[in-house]
Image 1 (spheres, rainbow, N blue to C red):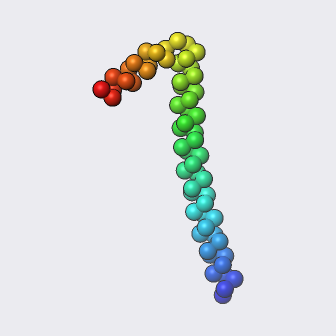
Image 2 (cartoon, one colour):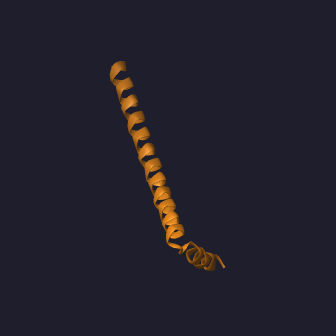
Image 3 (cartoon, rainbow, N blue to C red):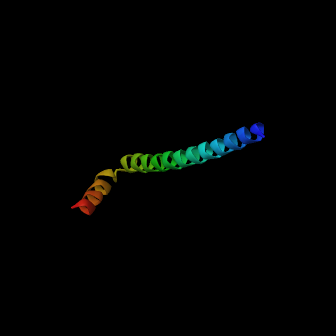
Length: 59
C-alpha cells in the first residue's frame, strides 16, 4: 500500500510540475513573440511610430 501511495504522490507532483513548465513555456513564447515584433519594427523603421502609439495609450 505504501508503494502505491508513493506512486500517487509522485504522479501528482509530476503532473503539477508539467503544468508549471507548460505555463512557463507559454510565457516565454509570448515574450519571444513580443521581442520578434520589436525587432521587426526596428528593422523596417516603424519602431518609433509604434512606441509613440503605445505611449499614447498610457496617457
